[in-house]
Image (tube, rainbow, N blue to C red):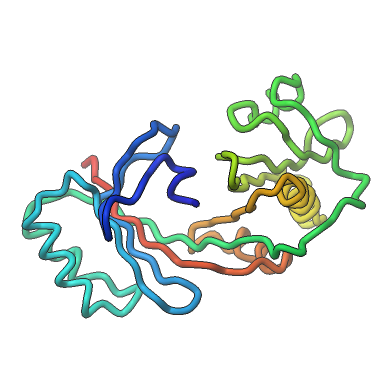
Length: 217
């Protein structure tokens, strides 16, 4: 589901194809993930040369997540530039529900205060908390389709540590679940604040992912 949010579709057992252009989502060289049951999976860019793909697939058999140096050695040997990102993804429990928070309002992406907050490039509905006539925290689907959505949460630095992020994320997720969709939440591993939010929300971790992307330098 999350791959399809990013416009990527699996081909066969381990190849990915970019079938839809999604803003800020480039085709990676490789995705390497450990699921919550400790199963490991890997996907490769379908355009990767067969000999490199074969060598990566061979090396991955001995990997202990997240120690991926043997995979990087293959890319270095081929003089392939790359960048690495390490992420954790969760889902909201299916019984999750919070419709009681009167502090959170639903706004449309074209509302002037949404545009001022910088959330007008995402999905149509923004769940927000206002103070003094301005949005101070909001949650929106950074990507959404008929099956699922992925959260983007931001709080004005002056209004942090008040529980606002938890409030807006809760209402966002509840509305997605009510619409029959799966709400995802992801963060970079180094983002401690986002990890703490996931913990406060009681989210279920489903996988950790290392993304090896094409380098630019």
